[in-house]
Structure formats: C-alpha cells, structure tokens
Image (cartoon, rainbow, N blue to C red; front, side, top):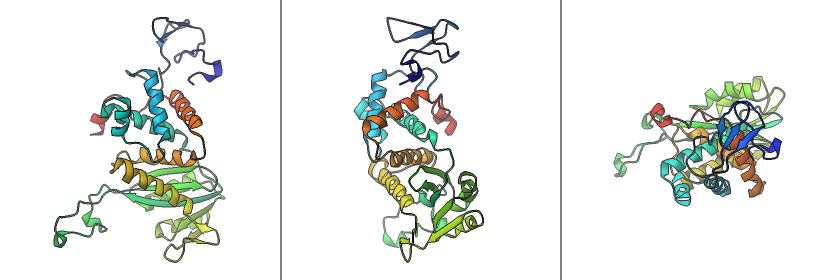
Length: 286
C-alpha cells in the first residue's frame, strides 16, 4: 500500500532511492544512498506513531465500515486506546478522505447550505425560554456547511459563517458554463450573473422540471445523522473535517468495504505529514 510502484519494495522518503537495507530485528529500513532510517509510515500522515501497523489497519477498517461515522469514544474502545489517541487518529483519517475535495465542480452542480451549531441551551421553565432562531439568542459559533455536488459526480463541501460568504468561493470553484441548481434563498441570487441557474422554491415543491437540490439535501441528511447519532455535537473548529468525511462516504457509498479500506489506507500513506494534527495542535488551537 505504501510503495505500489515498486511492488512493495521500500523507497527512501528523503531521496527516493530504491536501494535500501532491511533490518531483521524490526520493520526498519535504511537507505544505501543517504543512510536515512525510516519505517513504512515515515513522512506520511501516520508518522511518529507508537501503535503497531496492525492497529492502524484495524482502525481504518472500523472507520470506513461505519455508515454514519464512528465517534472517537467508540473507536478508542474498539482499539483499546485512550480517547485522545482515537480522536487524533480519526481526524487524520478524515483529513485523508478530504484530500481530493479541493478541486473544481462542473456540469450540473447542486448548491445548498446547512447551518450547524450556535444554539443556546433552553431554560428549564417555559416562560424563561428564548427563541433560538434569533441571532441575539445564539452563541456566535454557528457555521454553515455549503456543498457543491455534481449530479453523477463528486461532493465538495466547505465551511463559512454565512451563505453570503460562500458566493465568492463558488465562483472560484464552479467552472464557467456549468448549470447551477439552488433553492430560493436570496444568497444565491448573485450566481445568476455567471451561471445558468435553476431555482426551486421549497415552500411550493421539492422538485420542478428538473430543478431541485435533492442530492445536496441527501448529503446534509447524512451529516445530520452523523451529528445526532454518533457525535451528538460538532464543534465549529472541526466542522470542516466532519463535512469532508461525510462527503467522502457519500461519494463512496457504492464501493465495497475492501476497496474503501485500500483507498483510505493508500491515501493515508501517500498523504504527507499533517499540518493540523501534529505537535501541540490542541495547545495552538486554544
């Protein structure tokens, strides 16, 4: 999975030399050219590991097999590791899944937004409760996941503070000449100047002469089920990782489990060292 081009023979990650010594005591390699010692996960997103490779392969198998995702607490119990270990490992896999979601969309593209988080806890007594739909009764941490989903193609999500902020991103990432499908929200009015845009008013119908956002809504349905059924609450700081994971699951829903495991495994071993989940990432985030 790490070196498919050389049929599994080790290649130095520092100088790309294929002439390497293999240590017999443990799975360690040494480059004959630069004398660099490395393992099968050196220079990848799984680098600096302490768990055996078998545990990582088991974690990938458990992770891709879950239809609605898997919580870090459940993954930690299955692997018999601490919660923090499972949390970081799960997010590294999510980062791997979202690695190919930075491209552009074209053809028939459905666009929609889904607001997540930011609500205050309700008071005990009914007379003390507030309308949580109003902006003044929210925490300010509310985020919107905007998805660009090609009909018959890829699912490309990103996170912004409001749907209005998503318009410049859509203009950059949806190719000219595409047909855009959106709902009646006024945020998408600006797209008419650049694309052929077909709108659907959900207060009257879900679909009308091919104008609908049903595939985008299907993605949000999976994201909501993951939030309610597995994670219970998704922090806005990590929302993009969860959205990328569910987009990958939506695109790979027709692929068998074995191929899903190989794709994530090979993707993790081909992905460079994580910039988000290495070192004192939690301290820096705080």
